[in-house]
Length: 167
Image 1 (tube, rainbow, N blue to C red):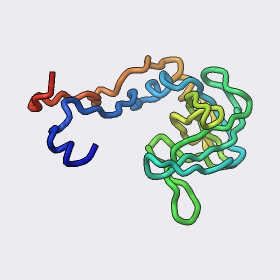
Image 2: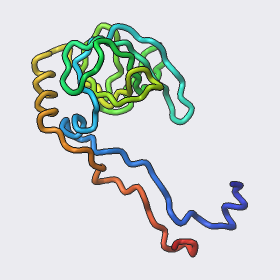
Image 3: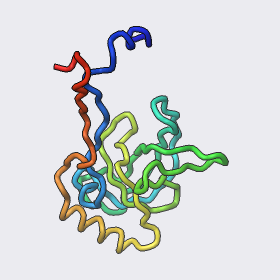
Image 4: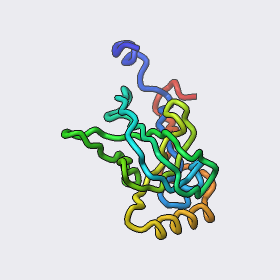
């Protein structure tokens, strides 16, 4: 739609936004993830530039050390959103979304997404320092997981009653 046509028609009657499920607590994350596992990152498989947003997708090959939810395969290739840094590293896009680095251990929650191998990383938290604490935390979160629900701060449809085109 051209700008002149958009101006003649006025603003849209309904504006849509993207609302993601609540992801504030471990229980929220556990409820939404299909699988949760303690993994060791074996290697970076590839980095893909993404057109829609800044950054791209980092694909990593991981070995499952312990299954905490679901039945992930023993080895997986999983993708995650990252920001590429000058100098060759990767930065996280969200606080609980650490870029997976080879040789390190993480607890990851994944969602199915065949475009990225065995799934897409919903969350990743470090587990190198204390494996017992990490597995205890996420076992408890799985045991008390919340059913997926929208973020209470999200309103994905906004009606514009000032537009005559609004029903």
